[in-house]
Image 1 (cartoon, rainbow, N blue to C red):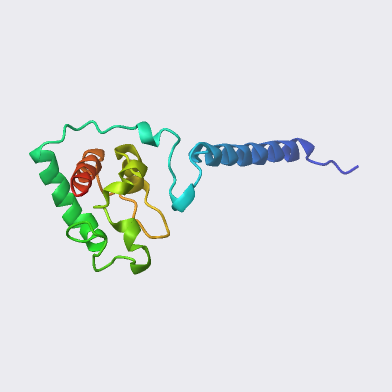
Image 2 (cartoon, rainbow, N blue to C red; image 1 turned 90 degrees about the vertical axis):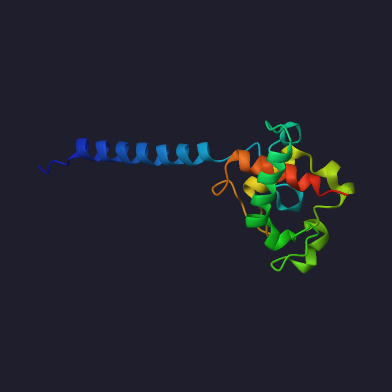
Length: 149
């Protein structure tokens, strides 16, 4: 009589099932189902418009924001925020123009925070959440808002 190692087979099957289930759960936990890509390729949470800057805008914050802008944003958005930097996308210059006050209602500070943090693929906007602190992001937003006509 041939004896089959069913105990070992059951144990290995259970172990593999548990590993697969843990990987699926971990992957699902990383996803943000409440923040699907939206119009224009941006990924914004539902409450983005309500998010407010913790900074009080003053000369020091604007100077810090201008420094971040010069180092991280100017090459695309241009020195004055017109969207005319050397790395700007000429097909989307109007989207890159930070001086257009009529677009302010579409870009309150919370929306800008998520756009700067997460970026998008097309038209290209780098994600800066791994390069800048939240305070630096809020300061560059304050500076960009100061460029509006």
